[in-house]
Length: 316
Image (cartoon, rainbow, N blue to C red; front, side):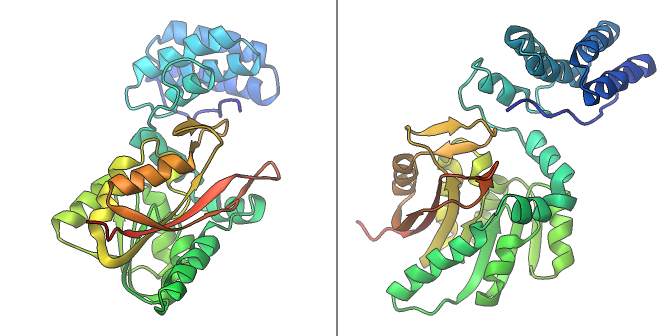
């Protein structure tokens, strides 16, 4: 997967900004060599222009110039510690740096703010996304096996996005709270009117805040969220604290045949099943159900995924 073109971020120098835009125009027409030359002129004018360095990395990558792409992405990363464009992920994809680096909040927020208005159309109609429906089926099966009705007093939707998972579960919850890092996604969810409360925050920060208020939930879900989280331990630990003794924690992950965590070519994380089970065990949660089912497709190919339902462990 090649790097996506970055959003425009001004360098503060009008001449450099014009050159940057010219470079993107050339790239859009397929003239990547000219685009690279213009970007080199741009970073000569403003050496600290991280966005131009990222764009240069993307262009060098398109040209098959791996070492030059790595050098440009590395420069972009060093100039932008918040990694707004995801240079560290591109470096990992190219085999440089950490193999599965964490995504920064700035990168994830930018990604979904940019994507919010077309999120549902793209995910459902083009990528055959069915994560919420599969989660609901798995949760319903666990509840049925326990002889309990599919009904929850309080429910927490982590990484709620535009509210697709919330809509799937809303008929079965008395109270629904949603959390998302992206203000644009929260705005889309709010417009649907199905959440009783919406929180714009990092998921882990929100979980800690809820714990501080001693809030507890009968169902906590995370649909297509953990593909943007490398180490699941901290979030799963925090979520486990909020689940009532007879409550459930249900989520999806993309998976792979190897061990632990892998940054996939799509720049999303895959988590091995053994890793997921161990993270849950350490958090004091027992696996109630794991289904290996694709929750979406990528280039018309089903994506290997896990649909997981966990509950507080009864082990001493």
